[in-house]
Length: 113
Image (cartoon, rainbow, N blue to C red; front, side, top):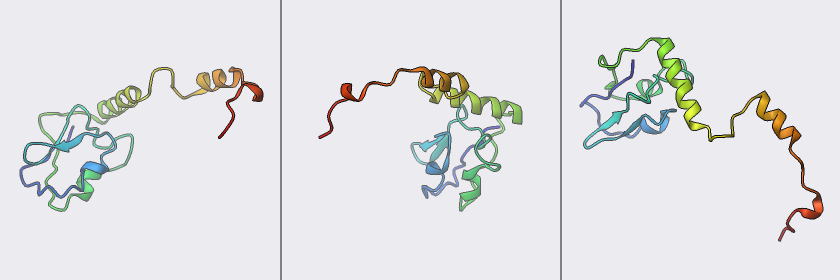
């Protein structure tokens, strides 16, 4: 399930920078959570950070977005894949390719200023 911020929000600015998925942003009047980006911190933390830090406890589960832990983890993986630039995937295959890439000779490197 994604979380949502109720109208009890006092705009304290505590939740937005703590969201590892950048799912929280300022709405017209209060902060809002993008349900397509909210994983309840699955994949990052054991507990939703916004819920832990909210001083007025105004971040409940959004009943309109019921998701299992497996679905939240799949969303986390989808978001992570989208965040990695094409060709920059980490892992054994890219490590092997980096090891095989030619290293320029010192004479072909630009002189430092």
